[in-house]
Image (cartoon, rainbow, N blue to C red; front, side, top):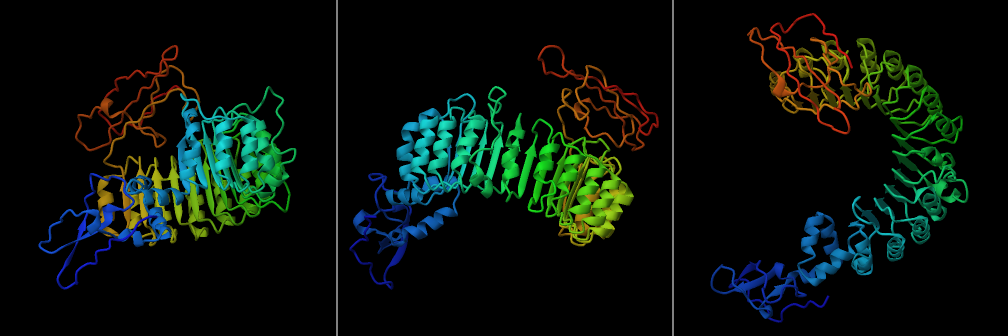
Length: 563
């Protein structure tokens, strides 16, 4: 790149020493020669001496551009920007070797797009983001980007509200190699998605979040109905998140015969019928991973998923209509299940029956997460005995996971490597069992378990030096109380008095409101908690209340609470 070595040959090695000059010349800030890595030769002393350009040799000029670009790939984004300021050659190589780029997609960006992508002409992964208070680029900017970046393989649009179906249609036509597309908080609606998918024959992953204008006045055309067979035939992953009318994607989902991953997250409407159409009894179905998060789905939908015999990963998160019957159907037919996440939302509709079926049929289970589920010792023992490949286990917010269940896990889960216990009535006695049990255990995390002290953590670390122990026994966390949206629904403006002794308590009291008991018998201090809802209008302030002090910490009486 126009760089040449100095014509002065270095003196013999026996009489000279090499000294590296790390100071940049103030007279020429951006020369074609990289002065940051220049070497000078001195006859007298070992101190760095400034030399003119005629007496320096740029050894970085011997590094090929290909090797320099490989070095840049190991650097962070900040370091790459710094390297691009060293010299013109590094600026050029850094731009040509950059494949990933993220831009603030404001409308002011449009005039700079030609020069920007002249420098970064090898970009294949692009992210365009615009905040809510700014005007995003429109169709002209997106079309210009698609012309300058025909080799895009991944594109992410966030908050680009000025883009319409015209820009999306041109994007699909110009970027034929696009494999992953993700959009969020955009306004092009169903028409934009359809116009984009018509020309995308190589698309493999599609993610849509908070897509606006999906109804078009209640007469929207379903996505994937006309001329989108090529896009549906190549799709392998579909993720729909926070959509008002996500069922419009039904034809696209059912038409994707190679679909392996389906994620439906916090979308409104009934999804049982769509799951029946997707899974049904089709022997060609190849779904491997399914996520159901806060959906209106029941055992009908889970029974339909049981036809996916190749299912390996299943997340059932806060779906109150799902019961043991649906879990049993999945366990009996999906024998390759490796990862299972169940958030029962404390509804007690998924319990021992479903977990025993999992233990009986899912012998390949490697990861199990139970949140808000109350299993008994019988189901825990069945899982520990039959699921011999279980490596990761998380038990959170369970009222029935005590020392007996933890000891059973420690003695029978031989392959267990990671364990997380959160908000369960476990004490030091149960944690001590891991000093001898679970020989392959690498990490154990215990949080918000009131009966677990920091001493058992220190003792366990001393007993098993290689085990990573994470305890919050000595930490007191302050959590905001939101009276508007709790697990039980909308709270009224009333005072709640939880029981004095209850394993079901999941929220920590505010440390500023705790008063110590005057008795020194070392018993746990019981605290009444007072919680208020919203106070008129749109005010969101919560009124703190004073907690009554109790001297007898192990009182067996229960206080009445209202919610």
